[in-house]
Length: 401
Image 1: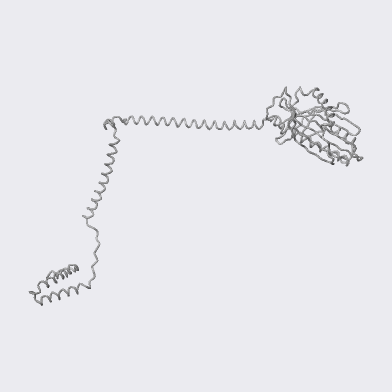
Image 2 (image 1 turned 30 degrees about the horizontal axis):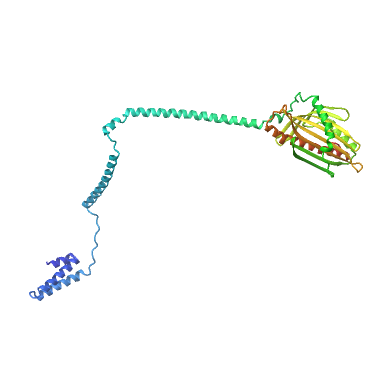
């Protein structure tokens, strides 16, 4: 079998082409000596081999796993690469240690300087005991802090209650007895003298009434000498004579009617045209009830066309050196229309200080000016309306309330 036959049997196309090229070269070089039969037979064999191999499809190469030696070589190569990378890291760490090496201290000396295991255990136990004591102390301090917090809240609540009930003696209670210095004839004598003075100053103090059938107003103002004060004016016209209206009003001023929040210590007449009284009063205000004790002196003055009734009040407060004053005028004048009369109620309420006994703080003064004066003024204003209604019921022959 020739080389060409072996190549054809193996089916190697590249070897086939190489053999064909060698054959062509040999034919060209040996054309003079070779026979034409041999050449034709060789060409015939070559064509037959080409004809047999041409239609064959190339074989698929079988993909097989690499052998054991190949895998082992790959693993070793990977290990070598990993070791090389570790070598680089270790070299860098050695350089780092060399830079931070403690000068003059050998490793044996450093080991000797380090504490022994027993010393470490003892030190750990001491630290544990300190930590345990600190935790116990912390728990005790927290308990004490909680107790102090509760105690502080209770004290703060008591302080707030005391602040809210600073004037508790003036609120919701029976009035105190008047001090002995005030419950005597000297104060009544002073009020009697001032009542005469108020009557003589009436034309200057009392404003002219408006020309209306009825009007009423309450005005707060500030007086240069008295400070904050209230003025109230009520004017009305009733269908009765001047004498009848003045008699009815004087009866109201001199008769001790029973009121729900008012009691009398004494109520005495001083002749036919004067009366004195001592009273205890519980008033309602925007901040609660207010208890007060007072004295009053009233006097009646008659003219041919006018009847004037003057009342002078003093109300004593629990704060020493502070009391309230009220000057009240009731003026009944005859009308040009027969059977009619005009009535004017006018009063002033203000706070008075006694310089020799004054001991109030600014809060007390503000409370009296803002609360007690307004409450007393409102009560007197309502009382004027009640007197007007009683006169209206009288002229209509209705029963009195």
